[in-house]
Image 1: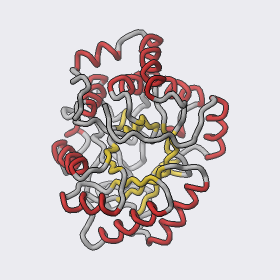
Image 2: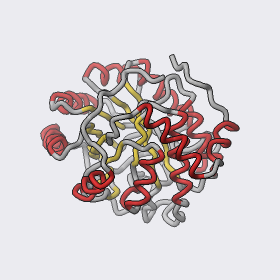
Image 3: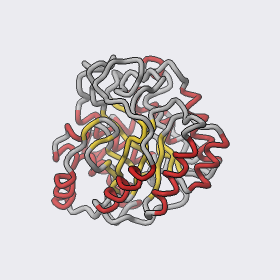
Image 4: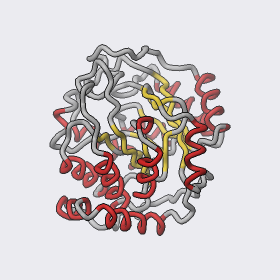
Length: 322
């Protein structure tokens, strides 16, 4: 059970609007208490099936509703996935995430996905999958195959959600999260900033996450990468200090979660990334691409982490969240 404080929007607004230095100091105090090893978890995400998705998420290059430059790709074979997972492990990644562009995984492909999970698990990597909405039976099969984490982002606040997606509801997403937790897997769930949402929408997203029971063990914070051909292609970039403030609040209200810098990191300066780590981020996606968007070069990431004095050795993951 989640015995932590049930947060309110008023309490989150109070945190967020503190002086910047006060907020970061508070977030760093929480972070130092929960993660004294100063380690950054490295994760790699591979798109196992790309494009032709029936969902109409306005930010997504893989939606079949928009004309983008993404090259469509059917489900990869297991050998290719194993090879990419081995490369990720050899390059220092601790978690290997697989992403399939589906509303929900189709019956004809699901056994192949289960084989991928088993194969990656056998390599000694943490396993994560994002493949849309799940049935109870699918969630249980994934657990039995060895899946550690299932990713299913809420994206934004409940109120702003209909402005971004119409092909499924907020409650559809929450229902999948419940099935994942009931099957005994950990949840990877976060959102995307810069969709045109307000600060209040960002805080309501964090509020929804923090008040889950338990809150997600892994929380990716994405910065929109505007994709030509999508409805959000011309969105202006979020203020970097607002981005850091959001991470700091996430750290304070979900103290033991891995807060992950995800999409958009390729456009961040070293200084901005350092501020995000100071605010409590302690995981990054690492590799050439994040599904279809670029990531910084691996050598550049390793150099930055070395300059900042962070370890990348895997700390023991906790089984429960306070």
